[in-house]
Each structure stands twice: as structure tokens, then as C-alpha cells.
Picture 1 (cartoon, rainbow, N blue to C red):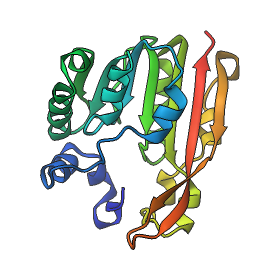
Picture 2 (tube, one colour):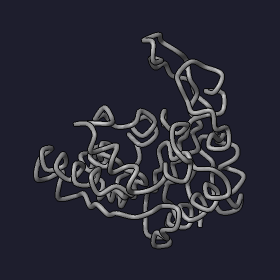
Picture 3 (cartoon, helix red, strand yellow):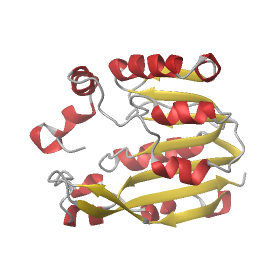
Picture 4 (tube, rainbow, N blue to C red):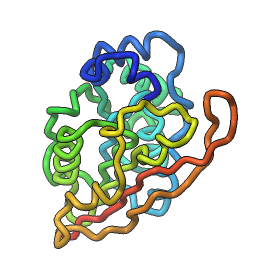
Length: 218
């Protein structure tokens, strides 16, 4: 998310933007699953999972390797092709439990009540688009299923990690939780845990993630 200020904000969410970014390099992301995915889901019983904005597929591949039937969706076909290739490299057993689909998450409606897990990692959208997305993602979780939404916390803007100076795309876990119907959800985690990453100068910097993990009651 470090180049948003160099583009028209609407371009940043387009297929053209992301296809160009993925095509410009051999890898955009580390290839490792997001740490909050591993932290929050390692002990959750596998089922059918949906990963939003899957990019090069690291989270989907980790889920599939841990027993989930995992679908990854992304706006970029370049990313999805790369993800499918990496799933194949991980072995036939993993690849067989992965599905890839090109969608524009700003308007896509996932099937309601069909998933044991819906995960969205660092989907930094402005309001009201973000709130609309989170409501659609929540509706896709079946009773007993998990919703995991993780994002860049507004506190990161005060650090040297190079977040775009667009406060509206940052959010807190409390903002996500407030959009869930209290009678329908059990909130397992609503927090802003810290972790350390390197800033552009190579210095270790403590940042916060907005982490919302909830289970649908009914």
C-alpha cells in the first residue's frame, strides 16, 4: 500500500493497476502467510474458506495445506495465475483444495452463508466502500463460521513505515465490530496488537494491526 499517493485513488483499486504492479516484478509479497492468519486460525477446525484480495495466494495455500477447502479472489488475473502456479508447486494435495476467482471486491457479492471462514487481510478501502464490503463478507459466513478482518491501524500513520497519507483507508477493529449485529456474532478478538517490521530505511518499527475475529452465532 506504499504507492497510493502516486496515483489517482480510484486507479489503485482497478485490475489495470494491480496487473501492472504484479507484472512489473517476480514477486510483490513475501510468499509467507499473513501472521494474523496463522495466529488466529491455527487451532480452528478446517472447513470451506474464502480469502478476499488473495494476491499471490500465500494465505490460501497455507489454509489448503492445513485442511481447508480455500477459495482466493482478487481483482488481478496476473496475481491469480501466479497464485495457482504456486499452489501447484506446493503439491497436488494442496492445489486440489484451492480455487481462484477474479472479482472486483467493490461490487462482488459472495454467496451468503456458504463459508466456515471469510478472511480479508489488509484490504484498505475508503468508506463507504469498506463498510459495504465488510457487511457482504459477514453475510457470507455460515452459522458457527469465522470472520477474520485485519487491517492497517491508523496509528501506523505516526510511524516511519511509509503508509500512504490517506487516513480514510485505515481502520480499527472496533469500527469493524460496530458493523456486526451483536446478537448474531461472538467477538473473539477485537484488538490492535503490535508487531515489528522494517521501515524503508531498514529500521525496526513497531506497528499495530487492527484485528477483528468473530464467530457467527446464527
